[in-house]
Image 1 (cartoon, one colour):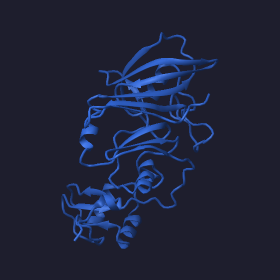
Image 2 (cartoon, rainbow, N blue to C red):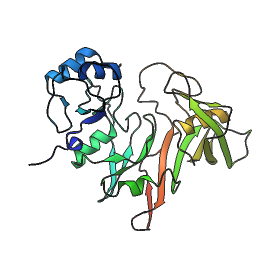
Image 3 (spheres, rainbow, N blue to C red):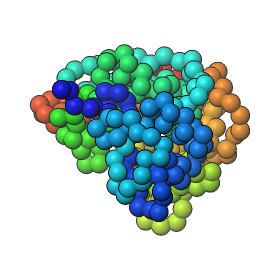
Image 4 (tube, rainbow, N blue to C red):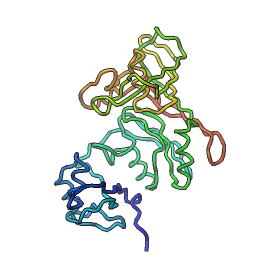
Length: 293
């Protein structure tokens, strides 16, 4: 008999936290406050909430601290994102893809199927794909995925141990007041709204190296190398230097409105270079995308 594999079914997993709830339904409603109770009731009714061994459970199943459950994330009427990813490399251990602007890497909020991860899982028929790093939804370019759970930890260590060289390109206004190449360090923390970051006083936790690649009148093309990997680091650092990246809806000021596919953020994950932890050979990947002026 085949054991239950939540990854194969693309099921999410949760272990119930401590509390005084009477039922699993009550716990899930309180734990996932953004999901309406009626949606959870519907998921239970359709067998979309499972026990640890993959059996559907009822909404009145008794609550138990630490109970392991699997459930299926759903977004009613999920909006199609009209962009197309490209697969650049596939082997036993790694997948490298070019992510277009506006496509999220992983499920979250209003996107589940319209994400790079889900699209690649379907295209490659590999439910074990896991992104080894993230680039935000507005950024385009290279994303590296682990394709094999057995070798995953070796590749995951490349990032916290800073054994991978990441290069980005950005287009922004001229920064004639600065001398390039330069290094910008600061402390980044979450701001309001919750998805934005800002610089604050305190010990630095972020570092970016920048140089100018090309000058074109009122716009310059920059190469940015993040030494650390804080959320929105390059976008915040460029804004702090005095030249927010072109078409950035978050920095320096938050712009309201729908995505404008004709005005993508001018930020591109250009290249990845590292020594393969399994073979010792140098691996180098370059995006096939290009930032137009």
